[in-house]
Image (tube, rainbow, N blue to C red):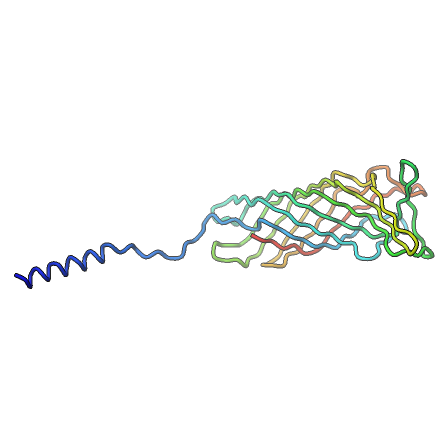
Length: 231
């Protein structure tokens, strides 16, 4: 009787230990992941359709950063939309100098005999990118191809012209720069390094801006560089 009671208790204990075990759980897969929420970019800024004899000098650059809300459109989350907000600073170094003349600005060309260190236009822009997104990412794969294309809208809230030589340093607000800006943008690449291109659909200057010779100034920015995405 004692032996039978012992076996019954032993079997009951083993059964309880097995039945009490929770089923093993594998790695948790996030099927609702989002991609590329933050971005930082560095570009070289070209000016297209420059007036006669206007040339770029030094390194015209752009720095950009911001946040984009990722909105997947399919179950695999490989197709989606992106809309965000960011900040950009752009510099354009040329031999086109702005001069204050009372309430208006005049524009002249700096010839080869004029000695100066820097002559640039600088813009500070509040950016709103809107993208159609494709990528071949998965919940487990963090290295993937991406193509993001769309529009970028901006409001240039601070625009300045600066001239620096050995004898003077002049800077002032340039009211001739277009405040509301927009253009087409394309980002593509693999993993960390991605190419960024932006082409403005309008002139950097407002309509009617011209050189002292009467030639219209209708330069359109083209920015090409690298962009980095962070979750």
